[in-house]
Image 1 (cartoon, one colour):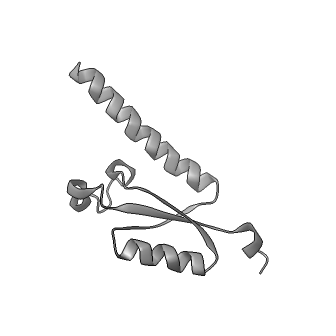
Image 2: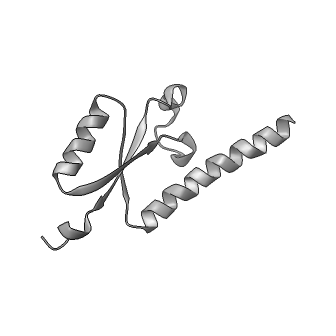
Length: 92
């Protein structure tokens, strides 16, 4: 049973990693990993600059080799900001 749970957990993490790659293929850029209050401030700033913004959960497996170790203990606090230029803003 423990092996089944381990496989399911790994599959879930891989789906999220794939999700990150899919977002990037769609033109979304990963901008930052933040927690509050800076998270809300950054989201508002990107919107004011004309970007579409997505805020997704932080998944340490998506950031191998990066500074994810310090965030693992509180990964539910941290969020990943993705931005994409709004279609009507591209010609401005």
